[in-house]
Length: 187
Image (tube, rainbow, N blue to C red):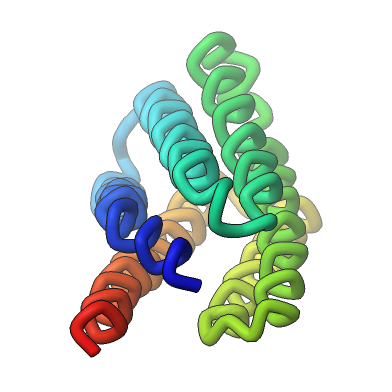
């Protein structure tokens, strides 16, 4: 357990950065809906790559302390691939942005569900938050896939709200991790 706290103490800031980027993307999507689709696709692609890289860094940094690190690598790889696709083929991405975001959210949600149940077996106090995030991701992705004709503006607003909520949740979790580690190490 001491090793897990040691890894958390070193990596809480990576979780914080992930949350800050999600909040920034959410605010962009909510307050600049008139921005071009190409800009949104590029920003989504960059965000997904950064999100995926930070997830992989967290996984690699905690691989010795926990056996769940592989699922975080899967989550990160999904994000990186979605981001690379968006950046490399922006026109194709623009035509299919709802489908790409929907599938991305469902795949990330599924990875989070697996993580949540693995965390529950380890008696982790954060498993419920990971479970909730996974369920919300899957529901949101399903909604976007089920209603592709809802319009780009609605997709942008829904994505903005999703990214903002996820980002705030991630920032709060990073601060809770940092606080919990400090309490354990000071006692």
